[in-house]
Length: 439
Image 1 (cartoon, one colour):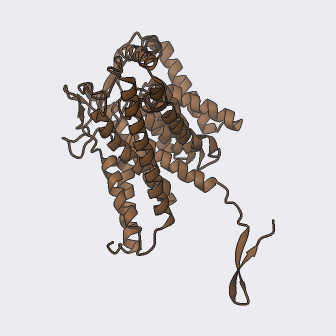
Image 2 (cartoon, rainbow, N blue to C red; image 1 turned 90 degrees about the vertical axis):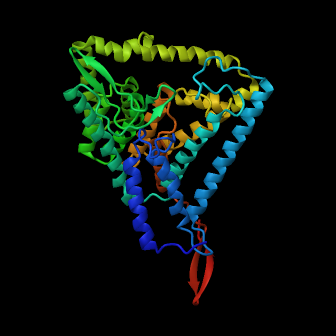
């Protein structure tokens, strides 16, 4: 093992690294190596964070956070290996020959067993796990300002795109260089929506589309509100409203309603936001009924493209689940096989057992974090993600999701009361002695 950098030097380098990492965390449409999918900045920096973890090691000493970091990584790897083996054995036993038209990742791959997407998606999972574990075990409170830097980028770039489209009537996204599929569909899907005779851009900022944006903007919004970042909160709320994402509206309103039930009251700032959302939607309903129907009515009825895709997907999911054998129900058909709303995706990929583990991991901080400043924003942010996962959000590997999970588990440990030790160490006649504390 090489001699580690001096602590002061390492800490300065690590703080700069974390600042850059947090700033680029919301960016998913830009590849550092355009020819290689998945080389988005946050993923690449996640692998780079391993260097700073290893740099914490000293000769003959393994710090407790490092030990816990690698132990958690080992447990996750064993779980991944277990589900890989169990799901593939289940496919062999069931002798499956098709996926009933389900939306699989890489439809050109005709294999049933060991599809290539199992391993590419596992690389994404690895990067996301590294994000969660780093923020869980090594993040420092004084670095929280850097998390908000990412929020400012998310909101600022979204407002820039919205204004650019308003003025020039064409998308102004200059960050995206990522494409998918044979037709090279861009990872930045700019969509317009009509407000009377005016066409506005549906804000998606540095994400691929408005629904993905909802999964990032809501956690940032609740975190900014919790930390009284009023300017950032206003910017994020503006972008959330003009994303015109049904899931974003439902997630925001649901979280505020549930928060009031949790605490029996609701903060003035949250009431103001709820009133603004209600006024915004009421105005659209009365002034632009066709637009309101596009956002809500057509989508739920399946009369527009988005709604029809969801209905067709629901039929395919129903047919696939009817074909499940007992091993499929328990262990799924293979991690990284399908691309659906997250909870359905986890169920089909990893079965009821995998869904139960994922739900436990997600809902534990939601249920156990206290409703008080410093914790409330993380609690509501994860609740918003859970609602979006159930509705329509189909992207499990958004880097910000795993950053917020890491921060939530870090905060959960900090808020947990430390049990009193039954023993104490005292000096007796100049010598150390262990004494028993009274109960």
